[in-house]
Length: 252
Image 1 (cartoon, rainbow, N blue to C red):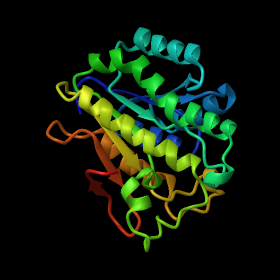
Image 2 (cartoon, one colour):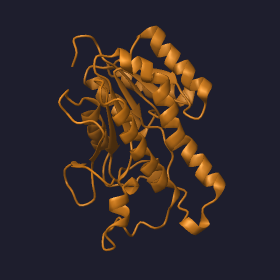
Image 3 (tube, one colour):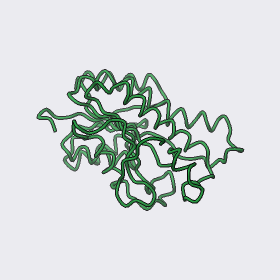
Image 4 (tube, one colour):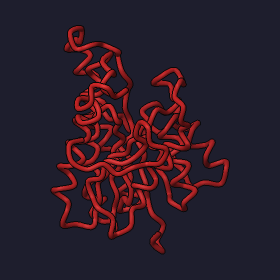
């Protein structure tokens, strides 16, 4: 960690993986902006962490609203002048629509949040990330966004994941976004990674996941605090059948 306090922003952080990540980053000594679109929920979440002695502040940010994103970036610029860690966590879960039943509205809604939001937020905060000594960008992805996991082995559990087209497609897009930003920024100290939290008990799945948000946050914070000699463009986390996080290259 730098002698100067590091600044982090986590979007969609009023609950679940985002909330646990905000807590963990603050426990590591960072000043954390807890991003949420709903002021009441976001303020309550930030106050919970602040009451525990953590340096966490609510910031209003709706990843589908360009004005909201710009205002959040301007606030961080005014108050801090830089951003060391950006976690693009805001997202929505699956409509459980098989390919032949998907509607345009379902595609548009999920891409707007899971994909477009990550790009617009990253671009809005990139000038502040460039002001940090060695910033880190972490995009929350999923194993279902991996082409190799989903399509290469007909005998695998992931191959059998047919019930939805939309969510896996958005996460495949997040993986491509991660790789393209990593290439653009490869000659800078900024590292860009995609985190695979695993099957986490959240509102997305009716809390049926076998991993906790805190376990998922460990993956995110590992990528958010990568050392200078670590690779960029990683797709890393909890893969099916693996107890420990693994680093996967190539055909995501």
